[in-house]
Image (cartoon, rainbow, N blue to C red; front, top):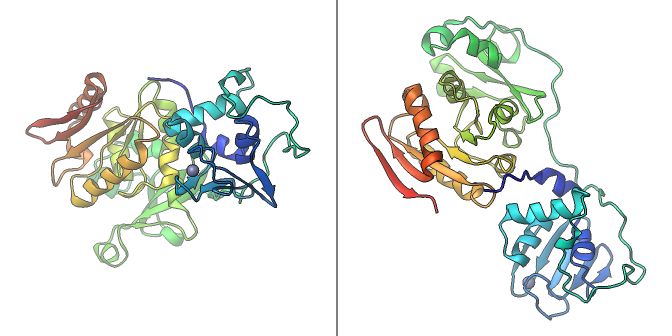
Amino acid sequence: MKNNWVNFADIRKRVSIEDVLLKFYRLENLHRDGKKLIGPCPVHNGDSPRAFHADLDKNLWHCFSKCQGGGNAIDLVAKKEDLSIRDAALKLQAFFLSGEGTRDVVKPTAPTKTANDEGKRSAPTPSDDEEAPEENAPLNVKLDLKGDHPHLIHDRALKPATIERFGIGYCSRGMLRGMIAIPIHDDEGQLVAYAGRRLKPQDIKEHGKYRFPKGFKKELVLYNLHRAKTEAGEHGLILVEGFFSVFKLSEAGLTNVVAPMGCELSDSQARLLADAKEVFILFDGNDAGYSGAAKAKDKLAPLVPVRIVKLEEGTEPESFSPQALRWLVNGMSRLDIADISFSRRRTEVKSPAL
Ligand SMILES: [Zn+2]
């Protein structure tokens, strides 16, 4: 596979739809109407003069004719050239962001032209920031936690080194009082929140197992990504549902593990995985896990190679021995297996990868 690394966030931020249309494709038949470029659709190569609209503020395009759809700049290249999202992004990255003279990737659709179009030059660099991307602000308080709490040591049987590595512990004051607090970092390693794991059965019944701070956008973060991506080396990333699967797999020697903190992978979380070499989906063996895994696979498939493991009903990743887990991950990769059912008794390969 290509080992090329794609920075989707950077491409979205720095490559405007305007530049893709006017500089990358050098289209000459679009006309400007306020903050829009309008013309025949370059994606399906139509000739209806108003079929295609590009909104330069939002950095989005739409075709009202044959395509009946639209998207961002990466989608445009992917659709127009029938490429995967990843390959389209690589192309834009090479053209706009690498600066290493890969300009020969351009295939002008219009006759090559003298760089100056009718006086409407787009600014040399786009960064007219589309609505500032949402993010979680870094947290500047650090909780004082007790790592040797019986829930962690006895109930969960975590090793002290694991507790220390992930910085988790019992919280005796504030919002997370009486809970196990788990620090959450963004992909750059900045502390952005603490999740609280409730311990009292009555509280769990009333409020659920976890408490996340108000305003925290869980869907923008993948738990443990900042550690996992440095540990992944030439391996892929393993996607589990929750914190404790991350801890347990880490104890099994699998440190390249991330979690969406639930069984739903958001679009933002999917994009955070796009740089991985491959992604193993290893959700819990129950209905929510099965359906969450199938949806996650659909989201990831256009971005990155995906392998999916269906665990036996009633099991979680941590139900299996460290050896079994390592065998599973390494074996799937080595044998190029895309889809496997895994139980404590037998293993069934569903479909080999293409
Ligand atoms: Zn079209």
